[in-house]
Picture 1 (cartoon, rainbow, N blue to C red):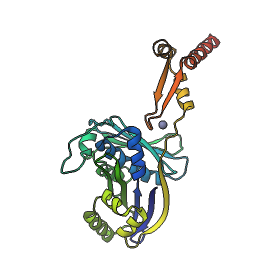
Picture 2 (picture 1 turned 90 degrees about the vertical axis):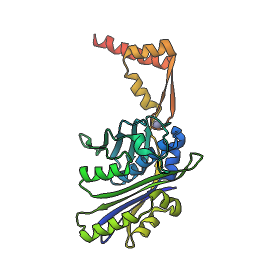
Picture 3 (picture 1 turned 180 degrees about the vertical axis):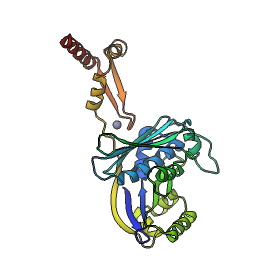
Picture 4 (picture 1 turned 90 degrees about the horizontal axis):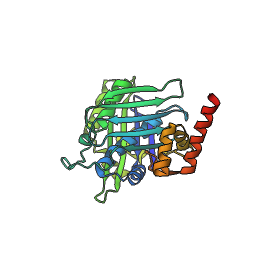
Amino acid sequence: MDKLSRGTALNGNVRIFCCNTTDLVQEATSKHDLYPTAAAALGRTLSVACIMGSMLKDEKEKLEIVIDGSGPIGQVVADGYYDGTVRGYVDNPHVQLEKENHKLNVGKAVGTDGVLRVVKDLSMKRPFISEVPLQSGEIGDDFAYYFAESEQTNSAVSVGVLVNTDCSIKSAGALIIQMMPSAVETDIQIVENIVTHLKPISQIIDEMKDPSEIARAIFGDYEELETRELKFKCECSRARFARVLSKLPEKDLQEMIDEDHGCEVACKFCGKKYQFSEETLQGYVNAHQALKKKAS
Ligand code: ZN
């Protein structure tokens, strides 16, 4: 079971988020048939989405992360929700590059010619959109930069995914350490020292599994405030796609009827497929025509 632990340490001067996302990254990998480099890129992003989801205030809020670096992977997209669920996809799940220093080359797959964008729907009139230029495309560095620039919070961000030789996920997760405004110089030095000597988070998760235990091992005075279960979940439905289809221009619908005798749409986020028959599409066309008649 995937889990997130959130808490504070150093007399409340730092806050810590640690999550094990191995199962949900495995689920994303299976659903999208991700090759290892793509699994690492999406897995890292989904792990941060889990943590950012836990930073939301209530269940009406949600967030979307888009990483678009003009690399061969295309866009990496992840949605995070207050209840600990996430979903996501990459444009090109079959991107695969040579390893560099025995490491999956996420930076090259993602690219650096672009932005990291976070759209927060805080159930206000307009969503809150924040965008920063990509730093390395390795995801961790990019989010550290995002937190500093957009949220004025100095953060150490460690994300990682270990992929087995059979392409299954060995471990995945993230650790984010944020300095609170109350932090003093010694706190900063302690955190810097910890981060410098820290093993890759994917390796720590592989060895210890439990994020609460990991946080306690890193900070002796770790005070846990909350844990939550994490899951890959997509809320797509036939009704939602039907609504989108019914609003398409009449001539597009007619084309689907004439040429394909129906249509199949696949959800980008989870890969689920929905079929719509010729008769259903004809029903949408008829509705368009009835509306036109009424207007004239
Ligand atoms: Zn879906």
